[in-house]
Image (cartoon, rainbow, N blue to C red; front, side, top):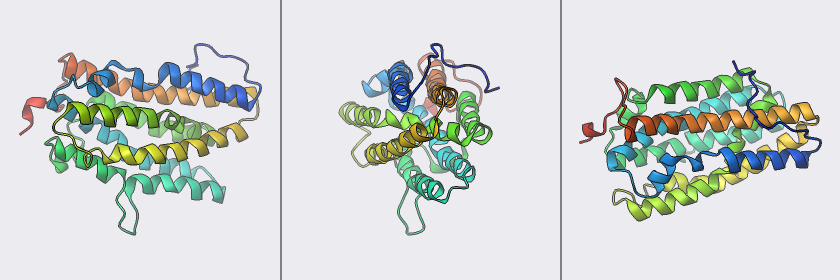
Length: 254
């Protein structure tokens, strides 16, 4: 199912510089900071229940990232790559020294929005499209080449800017948000920058033919689609009012 060509404008990628240029074009065209739902979120146009729906659904993505990263790590015999990649798992899960990870910081956000932790972590109330998209991402890194698995994480190249916009916009517009609640995003600005730099260097080094560079491009497009479709579903359900059966309903907030 992943062999469809996703790039509408394939071109000859004859060098690492051509590859990086095309990857940055994809971010400018396709990263989910362009989505109308994010404009509403960052601009203060959503109510608390709609923000809670976003945070609840996004939890499924956040809590699945270390699972995805564990799959990617298992694809490599290279010890140095595994050492580098396992840092991503600790960034989200925390570590055995008691340092909290991104998942715990995300739960601080859902706490502030009035969502019970048992409900959030059960993922019972998420949208079907959220589950399908995130599970497809895990399957992608399991089934594609290790190079493509790494490349799919390159949306991190564009994440620091959206985190900065989210921090500023939500602190300005929502009285149920404070700097402590936004700690997940504050921490991810530096983490995502470091991770993106490593992954970009990896794909530029290891994608050595036009064909493998195009696979890197397709992997990044796939990942932008994974992110975009989650926002499509949120917008349809919680702005358009088409909430599917069994999904969280904002009026259920205490």
